[in-house]
Image: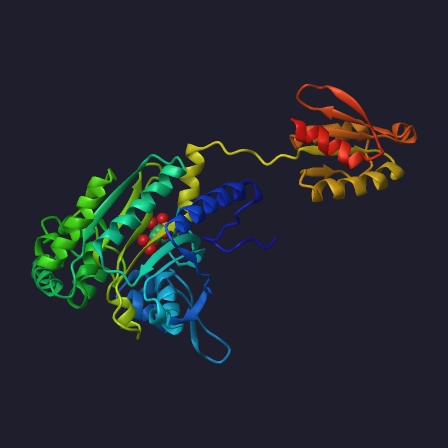
Length: 419
Ligand code: AMP
């Protein structure tokens, strides 16, 4: 048997009601805050991710699914959505008429990481991005919107961590201090970090290797190096969140794994998922639009890990099961043929109806109705049919009613809608 690829997974019908529920709540919340959906291709030119995410990142160095297409152009299955959103913003000159754009997108991402619980090679993200606004109030509003989404999904075991990563004005001084610190710790760093520390010392802050983490205790933190503007920006974000009673922690060790982040960076962590505890992450990326060939436009956004969000939402909710309102148990060829037409009309009139065409015995059809958890069963037997009637059974009260086949669909609809 052909199995799916390692690290990939199917989202089965039993799970998709939950996914739709999350998607519906996200869409309606985002729309209320003025976001519009953008749908993007999952294949992009490799160059886009190299230039935006950064050459020295884990994603670009070792996790991208990159292939030459038949003409030899290098293309990549997107590992994240922000780069594509920015590409689209620039390509379609969205900045020209109205530079302020609030966009969201939902879809699959691909990273060839080591598969484990909560970490897949194809996973899904819900992204929301605001382009063209540099005000710290938008940072606060975006974080608030994210936190409110968790509230609306009744997910409680989450905490919000916030930091500032500075800007091109203050970062050089911080990088210099960090490089000096790193050179004193060189022997304790993993090979990867030793290689990266010269070119891109901030990557070392993100390394998960225990010896590196240990070596980094006492490392300089970027919050101590913020310029006046960055400090003011951060203060407004945190004060605004305080005023709106959004709980958060300032986490001075928080850095994000991609090069393009500036100023506000944040993550939502949960205690419910073991090692893979990050459910969402985001931040400001004021330099990216320009770096990818557009005009200087600030931007901020977040990505929620949909798979992980679904997992913790399931822990906190009992979702209504999608069961049929009506199961039609028809016995005999004539009954099945008559029932087929009624069923079609009932489905089209919005009554979730199932029928079994197998012609099996009433006993086995009732078993099937029970398995499907149907609320009602309509029994269409040859004898009743000859007398111009069918039986409608309420599976909870066990009450049975005889219904005339004249105007059957209307009769059944009226009975079911009454409840
Ligand atoms: P990132 O852009 O790496 O911060 O990813 C944003 C969110 O996507 C994370 O907080 C995770 O919830 C989720 N995520 C990232 N990588 C994976 C993965 N391999 N499998 C499942 N979820 C992931």
